[in-house]
Image (cartoon, rainbow, N blue to C red; front, side):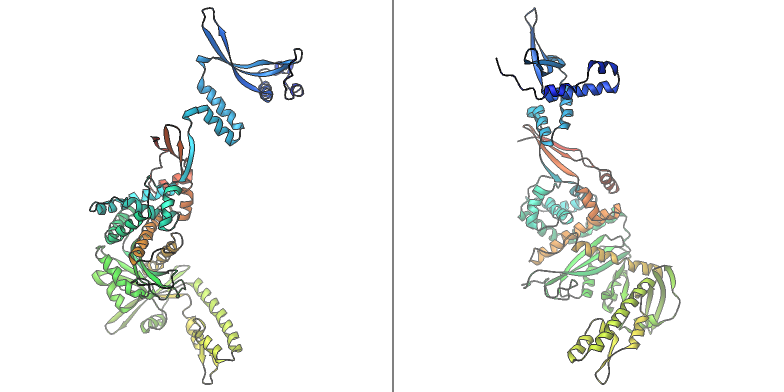
Length: 591
């Protein structure tokens, strides 16, 4: 007698099966359906399978039926018997789509790995295998802005005059996108563009392509900057009446600058005077859109850069332009330069050490309240043929802060003076950048707090002084216009942090200039996106980089498909007037 087949706890589970009385009592109710589900679960535990049976007709034809069955142990006969749970009908009449839907529904109860395998087995040779996924949303957004600003057209016009086999335009966009999305060296961009992001094309880059593109960009820098600015002004309806200009510098991790016109030792704004520097001048509009950048020698004074940038922008024939600059640019030579070709200026003035400025600050009169943080007073100083128009701006909150800082400094100074007992300590106080202002030395050699100077400094709390050459601007416009100078500072912060201007991996002067141009283009795209959406770039980048492009393969086809857009992603693209990406980007035959 053959051994009995294992029945997997059949007798133990029989008591849990619904009785016929239970079925009749609850016929037509949800309880009956629950009993059916329980019966199917019971059958599944015992072991369900699909079987086919054949029947021969009188005419000799054979009909094949497909059935869902399970083996049930027969106690009387002592062996398992097949019990049909459901008949799918004749094989030639099967509803294959319905069967596929059933299999997919059952896959919900499997592990993800088993579900994928089951789906592939179901589809057979036509099954799509998920190969890889790359972030695509950030590059898609940048490419949309790139086309809106006609940057590609500007590059195309220049490329037409040359016979390049290198994908110049695509390489420049790849480097700009890398600055905005994931800053890295030019050598690292080669792998980044191939494996870590989808830039909208399938070009395979080499590092020599990037260097060739950088040389091309520098060669046409002036023309490209002018054309890009004009297309940006048209797209954003920019008001180019105020141009804000300032400079910053960046250092190199190198002990010896070597032979270079740019890299030199100077006064570092990052407090790294021990390293060679280059100076970067940036001109932006009142909306924060960069219109011009220059790379200058690291030891060149900020004021000397004004003439070069003014000469560049004069050739653009922008019409009436008012330059807004900080205190470091307020020399008499720069005043004359800024007024060339009908230009005007608003300059921040130094509060100390200038005869005219001190006269303006000591002039009496009431302040006009603009808001809680801005009170203004206009002063006209005339001395012979020289006339200067000043605006004094007073911030009550800043005055409280200045007073608190000065009191803390004076308290520290009192403690220092009490402890002084050596000449070296005295020199330390007299040379201190903050303390020396409030100290005077007596004939006996002792140091004492200068009360007269303290009272003079109290009068300057919360104030800053502006001068202008434009008689048509109201004092309120002058004060508010100068306050927008912080847009340049914000642009510099973005360059140094978000776009990682530093560290620079280049040593040649031309490559340094080209690197700054790439950062300028990235800053242009970033600022445009921020202005049109009202959202910071880090937030835009984080949201859009969640849009991935998936690659699927089978034996015949390759499918590229984007992930579904969220509501936030759709709103960002809508505000930027960029069409959402296609759900299925491409279907092609596999090679």
